[in-house]
Image (tube, rainbow, N blue to C red; front, side, top):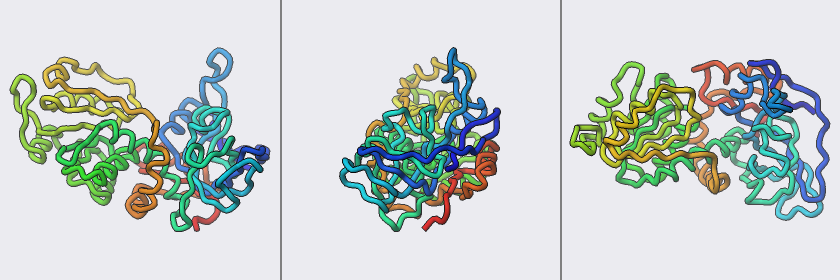
Length: 344
């Protein structure tokens, strides 16, 4: 069978590996779709992961957003049968997280799910949901955890920086949570159009508009701890990972505002901690999905048309190199999902 892994920096290699044989507590999954994440792109840029002796760079199996069909079930597995359509918790694999430096990657034709337990390692989804939409389960769990960490209330006014999959997912979850007003800021017009399509109340093109001024217009006036006028924005969500986002948020924050950091931060300029002090801003970090991985599954099923809008490109596994090239090119794609065979 075929599996995608890192190669030289900036390239992937599709290699032949042995099809796994499930043990008595495992299931074998025929992968039908797998999303490409920014983590995959980071490994591609490095040409692998620093997991060899002395931090030596070694090839990394790619993909941690798989959805597929159960084809073999171990004798001791309960609650699963051949033909079940499932999404995967990549953090539950005993041999190490799937696709993020562990022994297994989800960007392959067949994936073994070790110690398969419904509700822990996999969740079943209905036949009516396309595999490509189901493959959004993992990144939407990341976005949901971010929103949960924000503790956003219906009366809150929120701005999300970054209209990639996580930022757009956060926007959907905020609106489904009943949040009054959600603004999305980005520099790519097509992404802002998608933000409006999935429910954002307004958008800001931060390449041409002053974010603080626009937030003042959209959310009204508040004050910081010293009484200076600031936008009446309650929550800032950083799904972009750029220094400009953090500094814009701290400079714009009113008294008691929150900044939720879900993006992986790039090397950045100094953060103005004095500005955080003047607003008594709370900085909240959001990592992964401690409880959310399968909490999101029923809602993705219920609102599948909305989540489907996040997918910008469906690329067959036979063209995996093109799929990763799209993901590596800034601004070329919003969300790339690699498909295996048909998507019925």
